[in-house]
Length: 76
Image (cartoon, rainbow, N blue to C red; front, top):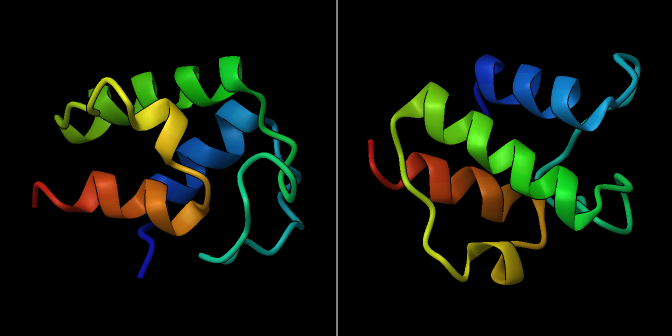
């Protein structure tokens, strides 16, 4: 389950419309239109909010909303 803070950060940083229904299966790039620079910015925001640190290869290996959430949630 995604949490509210995660969704808010994702929507804000990626400038996603509030009416857009997010699902775990959505591809960050092809479904949500997030480019590499925005993804990097998103990861920085998530690191600050959740106190996590993404691996160096995370930018290349995270493709879906679920994969991003699991990286954030794995530390909890």
